[in-house]
Length: 149
Image (cartoon, rainbow, N blue to C red):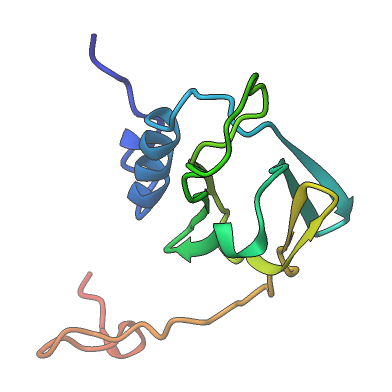
């Protein structure tokens, strides 16, 4: 089955990075571990909360790579303890979130088994720029042309 791209229009230029981001999202792991919430905490502020019970700050890593937020968790194997029952997951994970252009990670906090990552997207500044129109060499500007009738 061929995928139809929204960005194939000749009027939509330079948005190939959006198409790559959509491909990245589609390839993301469907694994539900660890569970997470995303909440909007302000007009331009968000918080991602991951349930990472049992992980210490040294076991967690947060990276921003291009426009992708990567959150990884790795715990060392605990071979000294003998479990009669082990119902608490202690496995490594990686969660990926694709960030919109301009979004920044402003902080991270581990509190009561929840890792909170805060994000901000500042208001975009409207930029208007006038483009000067020049004439090709050997042609006269329109104001200097004479009409032959």
